Length: 217
Image 1 (cartoon, rainbow, N blue to C red):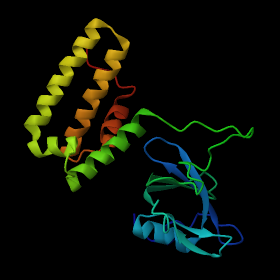
Image 2 (tube, rainbow, N blue to C red):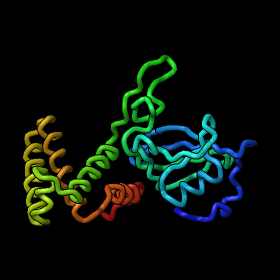
Image 3 (cartoon, one colour):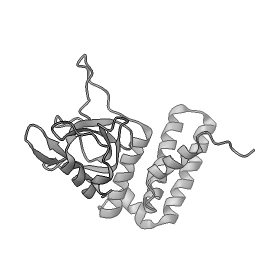
């Protein structure tokens, strides 16, 4: 991500040298927060991979999560058609809002709370991150760490067993059983991905590449 900021001369900062920056969860698309950047904070963000902003109230640069630990790992920075707003695609540690909500946009104009985003890829990404943590730390008593320690054959055996359970549930046609067994299958498939360090985003990209393609007959 670290590149010369001069490569982006078209960005339009306002009269105070600031540009609004929207942070968006890269896994599920949820808008997390709006803050401002100046050239220095943008350069720091690109150099470190962690979101840095400029606080208008405090008059200084700040790293997101510098006190709370709720950092934002920035994977991509986009800008809009007018070149006067940035979009940061991030992995958010913890919550983005100082109120304790995942997103700063947690209520509507009527004051009603907005339900948390629970999309499929976002949940899979959260589970995958936990699996990677178990893989790295190997905590005692962890089912995931224990299965990973047994190696690929044990994981593949579980996937085979869970696949058979899905087939049986599908044959019976009982809705709840199908949901339960598919969840087990997906979970153990994520463990296999974790073993080989394959991020679920790679699967999503592969599926996306197939949209609109004609299958061979």
